[in-house]
Length: 262
Image (cartoon, rainbow, N blue to C red; front, side, top):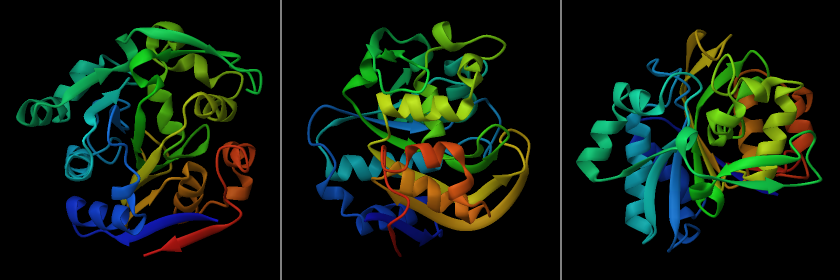
């Protein structure tokens, strides 16, 4: 059974700390190596299109309190230059204040990985810095025009470097022949080690210009499939009808047996 914490939002620090404590996350964080906090910064639009920097700050503080590993922020934006988006959304100021490394996956050195069990990405250009890192996926809960919802698993598209997966936008090649398949495949190469979902204010209708919907929750889990299933249900969708979740169930995580704790 997969455990998912779901707590009422009061502030990012209080609610994220509470959600992680319910998972005993302090005992499960790595004590060496690299932790990469991966927000959803698809472009320079303000939250809830993108992850608020305050959420990333809270996760960073939790990691620094409970881990001796190095902690960085990593993203490869969907449009524009990652460094410009970091600057526009306050991440550059945060990094400067706390001396946190900002990693641009779109420009990172890569290593080619291969898998035969993928749906169509039989090889993947993985940013070398992310290969062995503990990735914390930190998205905002949103509807998506291609995959019904975009939560912690779809957020891993940021790992795909623009030189290999770009076209009309930085990740456009991942949307053909199937965005659902690409979500599964990228997570087969690197799924979130921990998912923390900002469901305080969700985005409905469209992932780039939808309507804000106040839900008032923080969701967290070490199982990304369970986390995304709970998040998708909050948006009013049946996880059993979302292809990337159905294909991931029993492979990348579990959505048939979930314990929600609050």
